[in-house]
Length: 200
Image 1 (cartoon, one colour):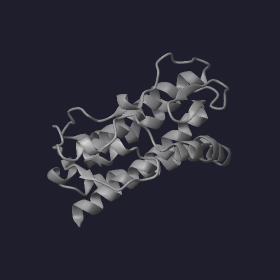
Image 2 (tube, helix red, strand yellow):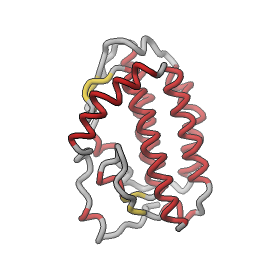
Image 3 (cartoon, helix red, strand yellow):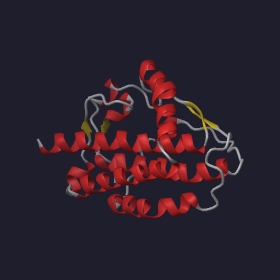
Image 4 (cartoon, one colour):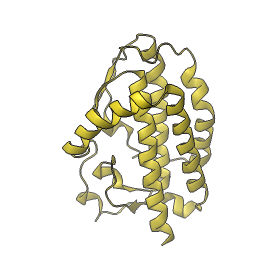
Protein backbone atom coordinates (compact mmCIF):
# COMPACT_ATOMS: atom_id res chain seq x y z
CA UNK A 1 0.00 0.00 0.00
CA UNK A 2 0.97 3.66 -0.22
CA UNK A 3 1.50 5.67 2.95
CA UNK A 4 -0.83 8.67 3.13
CA UNK A 5 0.93 12.00 2.75
CA UNK A 6 0.23 15.63 3.41
CA UNK A 7 0.07 18.10 0.53
CA UNK A 8 0.84 20.86 3.04
CA UNK A 9 4.02 19.26 4.40
CA UNK A 10 5.65 17.87 1.27
CA UNK A 11 6.32 21.23 -0.48
CA UNK A 12 8.10 22.47 2.65
CA UNK A 13 10.77 19.75 2.45
CA UNK A 14 13.88 19.83 0.29
CA UNK A 15 14.05 17.67 -2.84
CA UNK A 16 15.15 14.04 -2.65
CA UNK A 17 18.92 13.72 -2.95
CA UNK A 18 19.64 17.31 -1.88
CA UNK A 19 21.76 15.86 0.90
CA UNK A 20 22.80 16.90 4.36
CA UNK A 21 24.44 20.19 5.26
CA UNK A 22 27.97 20.86 3.93
CA UNK A 23 29.39 20.92 7.47
CA UNK A 24 27.90 17.54 8.37
CA UNK A 25 28.96 16.09 5.04
CA UNK A 26 32.53 17.25 5.70
CA UNK A 27 32.38 15.81 9.21
CA UNK A 28 31.22 12.44 7.92
CA UNK A 29 33.67 12.27 5.04
CA UNK A 30 36.81 13.40 6.85
CA UNK A 31 36.23 12.63 10.54
CA UNK A 32 33.45 10.13 11.27
CA UNK A 33 33.99 7.49 8.58
CA UNK A 34 37.82 7.45 8.69
CA UNK A 35 37.69 7.14 12.49
CA UNK A 36 35.13 4.32 12.45
CA UNK A 37 36.98 2.45 9.71
CA UNK A 38 40.13 2.51 11.83
CA UNK A 39 38.44 1.57 15.11
CA UNK A 40 35.98 -1.12 14.00
CA UNK A 41 36.77 -4.48 12.47
CA UNK A 42 34.74 -5.84 9.57
CA UNK A 43 33.00 -8.30 11.90
CA UNK A 44 32.22 -5.66 14.51
CA UNK A 45 30.74 -3.35 11.87
CA UNK A 46 28.23 -5.96 10.75
CA UNK A 47 27.47 -7.08 14.31
CA UNK A 48 26.46 -3.50 15.10
CA UNK A 49 24.42 -3.36 11.88
CA UNK A 50 22.66 -6.52 13.01
CA UNK A 51 21.97 -5.22 16.53
CA UNK A 52 20.47 -2.03 15.10
CA UNK A 53 18.31 -4.17 12.82
CA UNK A 54 17.00 -6.08 15.84
CA UNK A 55 16.05 -2.80 17.55
CA UNK A 56 14.33 -1.62 14.37
CA UNK A 57 12.34 -4.84 14.09
CA UNK A 58 11.16 -4.62 17.70
CA UNK A 59 10.03 -1.02 17.24
CA UNK A 60 8.20 -1.75 13.99
CA UNK A 61 6.65 -4.93 15.33
CA UNK A 62 5.15 -3.01 18.27
CA UNK A 63 2.93 -0.95 15.94
CA UNK A 64 -0.47 -1.78 14.54
CA UNK A 65 -1.10 -1.53 10.81
CA UNK A 66 -2.38 2.06 10.84
CA UNK A 67 0.54 3.26 12.95
CA UNK A 68 3.03 1.42 10.73
CA UNK A 69 1.86 3.29 7.63
CA UNK A 70 1.21 6.71 9.16
CA UNK A 71 3.64 9.35 7.94
CA UNK A 72 5.14 11.53 10.67
CA UNK A 73 7.33 14.62 10.39
CA UNK A 74 10.32 14.27 12.73
CA UNK A 75 12.79 16.99 13.77
CA UNK A 76 16.12 17.24 11.93
CA UNK A 77 18.40 14.33 12.85
CA UNK A 78 22.14 13.94 12.29
CA UNK A 79 22.72 12.17 8.98
CA UNK A 80 19.09 12.42 7.80
CA UNK A 81 18.40 14.67 4.83
CA UNK A 82 15.44 17.02 4.99
CA UNK A 83 13.42 15.14 2.37
CA UNK A 84 13.50 11.97 4.50
CA UNK A 85 12.02 13.55 7.64
CA UNK A 86 8.41 12.87 6.62
CA UNK A 87 8.21 9.06 6.50
CA UNK A 88 6.13 6.32 8.03
CA UNK A 89 7.91 3.44 9.78
CA UNK A 90 6.91 1.28 6.79
CA UNK A 91 8.68 3.72 4.47
CA UNK A 92 11.82 3.60 6.60
CA UNK A 93 11.79 -0.20 6.47
CA UNK A 94 11.36 -0.12 2.69
CA UNK A 95 14.28 2.28 2.39
CA UNK A 96 16.45 0.06 4.59
CA UNK A 97 15.60 -2.95 2.43
CA UNK A 98 16.51 -1.08 -0.77
CA UNK A 99 19.83 0.08 0.70
CA UNK A 100 20.58 -3.28 2.32
CA UNK A 101 20.07 -5.14 -0.95
CA UNK A 102 22.30 -2.59 -2.70
CA UNK A 103 25.09 -3.24 -0.16
CA UNK A 104 24.78 -7.00 -0.66
CA UNK A 105 25.14 -6.48 -4.42
CA UNK A 106 27.97 -3.93 -4.23
CA UNK A 107 30.42 -5.06 -1.55
CA UNK A 108 31.37 -8.61 -2.71
CA UNK A 109 32.30 -7.56 -6.29
CA UNK A 110 34.28 -4.60 -4.96
CA UNK A 111 36.17 -6.93 -2.62
CA UNK A 112 37.17 -9.07 -5.62
CA UNK A 113 38.55 -6.15 -7.60
CA UNK A 114 35.45 -5.54 -9.73
CA UNK A 115 34.32 -1.93 -9.99
CA UNK A 116 30.55 -1.68 -10.55
CA UNK A 117 29.73 0.78 -13.31
CA UNK A 118 26.39 1.92 -11.88
CA UNK A 119 26.27 5.29 -10.17
CA UNK A 120 24.81 5.54 -6.68
CA UNK A 121 22.06 8.16 -6.51
CA UNK A 122 20.30 9.04 -3.27
CA UNK A 123 16.99 9.65 -5.02
CA UNK A 124 17.03 6.07 -6.36
CA UNK A 125 16.80 4.54 -2.87
CA UNK A 126 13.83 6.57 -1.67
CA UNK A 127 10.75 4.54 -0.62
CA UNK A 128 8.29 6.43 -2.81
CA UNK A 129 6.74 3.23 -4.04
CA UNK A 130 4.01 0.82 -3.10
CA UNK A 131 4.99 -0.87 0.15
CA UNK A 132 3.93 -4.47 0.82
CA UNK A 133 1.65 -5.11 3.78
CA UNK A 134 4.17 -7.61 5.18
CA UNK A 135 7.05 -5.14 5.16
CA UNK A 136 8.00 -5.93 8.79
CA UNK A 137 8.30 -9.64 8.02
CA UNK A 138 10.27 -8.89 4.85
CA UNK A 139 12.70 -6.79 6.84
CA UNK A 140 13.10 -9.60 9.37
CA UNK A 141 13.80 -12.11 6.59
CA UNK A 142 16.38 -9.81 5.06
CA UNK A 143 18.16 -9.41 8.38
CA UNK A 144 18.26 -13.19 8.82
CA UNK A 145 19.86 -13.83 5.43
CA UNK A 146 21.87 -10.73 4.52
CA UNK A 147 25.15 -11.74 6.18
CA UNK A 148 25.31 -15.15 4.53
CA UNK A 149 24.59 -13.52 1.16
CA UNK A 150 27.02 -10.67 1.80
CA UNK A 151 29.95 -12.89 2.72
CA UNK A 152 29.39 -15.36 -0.13
CA UNK A 153 32.28 -14.97 -2.61
CA UNK A 154 33.79 -12.22 -0.47
CA UNK A 155 37.39 -11.28 -1.21
CA UNK A 156 39.62 -8.65 0.44
CA UNK A 157 37.44 -6.13 2.27
CA UNK A 158 40.41 -3.78 2.66
CA UNK A 159 41.25 -3.76 -1.06
CA UNK A 160 41.95 -0.39 -2.64
CA UNK A 161 39.01 -0.71 -5.03
CA UNK A 162 36.36 1.94 -4.62
CA UNK A 163 33.13 3.41 -5.91
CA UNK A 164 31.84 6.85 -4.96
CA UNK A 165 29.06 7.72 -2.57
CA UNK A 166 27.39 11.04 -3.56
CA UNK A 167 28.04 12.59 -0.15
CA UNK A 168 31.13 10.85 1.22
CA UNK A 169 33.33 10.17 -1.79
CA UNK A 170 35.21 7.03 -2.77
CA UNK A 171 34.59 4.01 -0.51
CA UNK A 172 36.16 0.55 -0.57
CA UNK A 173 34.30 -2.55 0.77
CA UNK A 174 35.15 -1.71 4.39
CA UNK A 175 34.05 1.87 3.80
CA UNK A 176 30.70 0.78 2.40
CA UNK A 177 30.21 -1.56 5.37
CA UNK A 178 30.89 1.33 7.76
CA UNK A 179 28.44 3.51 5.89
CA UNK A 180 25.82 0.74 6.07
CA UNK A 181 26.21 0.51 9.84
CA UNK A 182 25.92 4.29 10.34
CA UNK A 183 22.94 4.38 7.98
CA UNK A 184 21.21 1.72 10.07
CA UNK A 185 21.79 3.76 13.23
CA UNK A 186 20.47 6.98 11.65
CA UNK A 187 17.23 5.30 10.61
CA UNK A 188 16.79 3.47 13.89
CA UNK A 189 16.85 6.89 15.53
CA UNK A 190 14.34 8.14 12.97
CA UNK A 191 11.99 5.24 13.74
CA UNK A 192 12.32 5.98 17.47
CA UNK A 193 11.33 9.59 16.76
CA UNK A 194 8.36 8.49 14.66
CA UNK A 195 7.16 6.06 17.34
CA UNK A 196 7.50 8.75 20.01
CA UNK A 197 5.24 11.04 17.97
CA UNK A 198 2.74 8.25 17.31
CA UNK A 199 2.51 7.33 20.98
CA UNK A 200 2.42 10.87 22.37
